[in-house]
Length: 299
Image 1 (cartoon, helix red, strand yellow):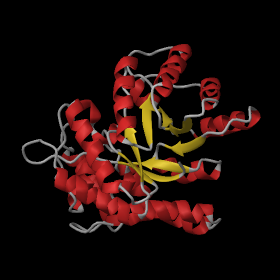
Image 2: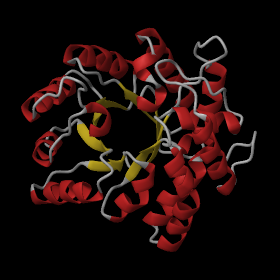
Image 3: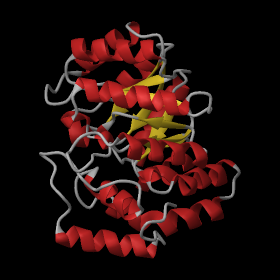
């Protein structure tokens, strides 16, 4: 479960339908780059704007493209309905995904007891690994450390995507897991905190930026694991402007613009997301140039 996992974008064609040839192109590049895994149907994949049929198509295509490659497939299956999450998670598990990524239920604002019951129910319904997804900036609710430790005792819960952006919170999670002798892989959910979180005990990242430069993200992971902190820091500093500006507006609007710049797909997003503003486009263009992303050329 460690390493670089790419939170895949969902390309659309000029008719605003799934662009599966572009999606396959992205998957091939990810496979060739040596990422640990890919995540279809996460936040970066615009799942709130996808139909169930479209999500199933994306997961099936991902499994098809990654079959026999050693690249893991982690399907985003979470919603703010426990019953719907269970239904979709069971379907994905039956298709043969390696794991499912389950976000804390959004909008409902459940208590810690409600969150724990939600994850336990989903976990009991599947035959694959489960990854907790903690992103309070989008959901309005956060798992606390005690709840995370209790959920870590469940054999199928193998990792957490920790996207608070708070390295101190990560330290507390890891400390309490050690205290209670529980094992849970912590993955950074923010590219800018990827290297800082590795330095305190995280073991990888679920990344937006690795859509665009998966090889560099894999190189950061390898350098850190080999104790070559000088190289890891060099890469982090070089790509930091994009870690920052790929979030200059709501994800995935900037990364789609960047992927279009690199020649992977169009830049279309679905409503209610809107195209990148002119001011944000200028910021992103400057960062792409600074980081050496050449128009029409993948990194």
